[in-house]
Amino acid sequence: MNPTRLPIIPLGRDAASRLLPFVFGLMTFLAGLALAGVVALSGASEQIGKPEVDRLTVEVQPDQSGDTDARTQLVIAHLTRDPAVAEATAISDDEVAALLQPWLSRDTLPGDLAMPRLIDVRLKSGATPNLAALSEAFATLGPGIKIDDPRTWLDRLGSFGRSLAVVAGIIMALIAAALGVMAVVNTRMALAVHREVVELLHLMGAKDSFIARLFQMQALKVGLIGGALGAAIAAATLYGIGQAVHRLDATIFLDVALKAPGYAVLAALPVATGLIAALTSRVTVLRALKRMP
Amino acid sequence: MIRQRTPASAPTLSSAFIRFESVGLRYGLGPEVLHDLNFAIEPGEFRYVLGPSGVGKTTLLRLLYLSLRPSRGLITMFGHELATTPRADLAALRRRIGVVFQDFRLLDHLTVVENVALPLRIAGASEAEIRQHVPELLGWVGLTDQMNARPPTLSGGQKQRVAIARAVITKPDLLLADEPTGNIDSALGLRLLRLFEELNKVGTTVVIATHNEALVTQRPHSIMRLSGGTLEELAAVAA
Ligand SMILES: Nc1ncnc2c1ncn2[C@@H]1O[C@H](COP(=O)(O)OP(=O)(O)OP(=O)(O)O)[C@@H](O)[C@H]1O
Ligand SMILES: [Mg+2]
Image (tube, rainbow over all chains, first blue to last red; front, side, top):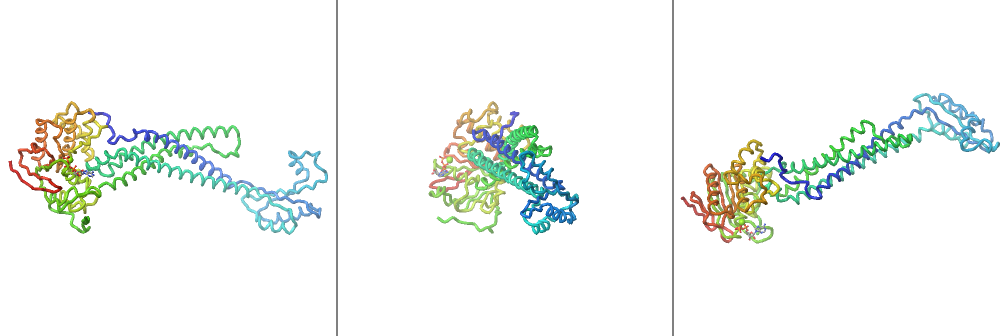
């Protein structure tokens, strides 16, 4: 007898169905990139979320009174009264000039340029100063006193990263939805092409689940093959980007290269693609069969 | 015409094997092709449906193999009143029916063996059962040499024999054959009828629709003659 059993319904042989693995592959590829985005961004914002920054800077701008030193001392007095502050020291003019060096050469600095005073504040580890109260107190000392807390913008960067991760997650969900729609459309087409066979099986007393399984297994197969293809290309792409970023040594680009758990999730993508395709295909066939007598 | 509805509370079980009560059928919004059909078929009967081309023989068989729902009236199959039988239970009823379609409906992408094996696969038979029974039956209908051929390469008569083999492979309770010998010479036609008779002897109820009265067998049988969309007479003939 025939050793290789032929499929009861010759699915996947028409021109449109032959393209399907590549469409599923493309979808999975995009989902892989979005997934890398989720992993990298949520990882990065995790790190940014709890920065080990234990310093902040207070800037005192000179005003008309001219006595910037006295105001600086008052600010330091306020600062040291905050229990979170370990030490507050004014940075000398020379040091400020040194900081400005890259932008303004010493010679070109006019001697009478009113330079702001900077106060370097070291915090007790884990402690948070009451910035609102401090700002209020500084306001009574006149304008131009600014607290420069690196944690404020790091927090903002962190939540920006988290919202980007959410966006990437939404993109993944949309790709999954598009994949489901593709599977439904393809199944409907296959049902139309093979309508006579489906009707015959139905008349022979095949249960709906028997007929649905034929379509569902084909969708699973195509989903797994296409998904594996897409995930492999996504992995290669991300590896390449990771290498490039590594060479640049630019941590600002965040860590796009997936870490080991990231690759594991990437490997699960073809399974997800297969399952989405199989499930939507099954539901589509069952609904179509309900319309038969 | 108003479509008759059965209340959901109507009893689903009836003692009748097969019964038609005031059955009428129209395709879509067309005229009634069949009307006022009243008859019963008892288990083990051998019955012919006779009548000229276009009278509605195929339509009557389609009602019997649950491919059409009647526009009105009640049909009882194997004791189940169809209108009140849950959809999920209909598949099991269909598996008790073997059909030789007038246009065969063989699957062109499958070999002869796989075509005949299909009802067994649907019924969940084992591979061993399939390997044993299918070649045996194909031998009976004289298709041993064509076992691995595809239907498009077969002659009309060979296709018909494949269709017959597929219809009887599960030893169904009810065998419906629509012009089963139309493409076959009379010697082979009689041989195939003999197959139907053998099945009938072991309990299969057989209904054959044909316009060819020469086919009517020696075996005790009854005849339903369709004319003008309804039954003209029901004659029992004892051989
Ligand atoms: N699917 C359909 N849609 C609409 N009308 C149909 C359909 N099938 C059959 N008919 C009509 O119903 C009538 C009976 O057709 P049917 O096929 O039952 O006749 P028959 O007795 O089997 O004929 P034959 O001996 O030629 O096979 C015909 O007038 C036919 O045109
Ligand atoms: Mg006919």
